Image 1 (spheres, rainbow, N blue to C red):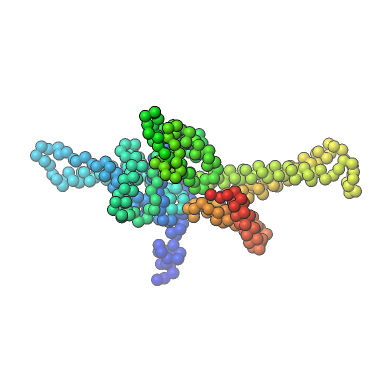
Image 2: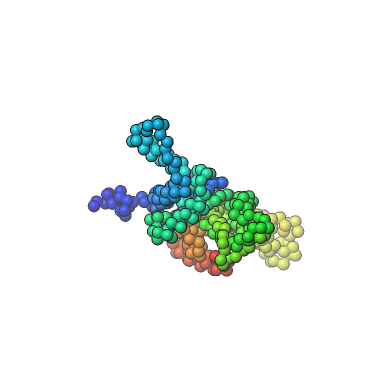
Length: 365
């Protein structure tokens, strides 16, 4: 096979397969206030897995809501072939409007929303699927790994989480003196989203659960699953702004100390005696210059690290200490690249080790 054919093929060394599946897509988003399914799949097979998932979901939706038999318009019956064709076309049209596929820009993760509010909910469909798989011992999917029902999608803020979870919790945990208490647990998971406090999010949902029901982390009867995702652009921007703020404070501190090096009593042999006003003016000038310098450096460092960590976490589809190590190496390498390859390697190793150390101290979960 020639070199040009290998480059054009889907399995050759020069294929565009990686660019096809991992290109940035600004329109990729999970619609708010929707319900559906968060599905993990083999990395790089998101589009094939979406078609497979749609086929499986349509199958179980038809089992839960079987189609009504078509009634003949003529008393004596009509053309059977035309009736069958019309019924098939109707079923295809209904299927096209049941589910929608949405990109997430996360490696090995897709989202399928339900367009209709009628019929079985996502939990009922997944429960039926799980029961069928357990009974038959046969996997219904080749590329999809895990189906997670999503009852509601909201913005990742505490206020929106409280509002979105209120109705769901009331429906799952009814109140009343004659109601048997239900033992439950809360599972908190997040992907590329570390800005929310875990305990605050859990409390925002648990506060809606009535008192008769109890928490049982070992053997719960019901489990409240909370999944969070973040946008890399937003995370990078926020980290850059926070880094600049820290740089300004650090620059003010260092500039003030440098400006205070010239005393008012003339103890330094190389400096003339200065008044309080002159010293204060010099401290302010030095602090302002240092603040801008440190702000740019800390801002670039924070944005590079946060953006690299977010991209690595999405590509690996894992949340562990290695994300910080890879992000630290990338950040140190970029910051030291202007001084040459040796400085870039030293910066990569140094930042990676420092990131791993900080990650261990913060007790990475």
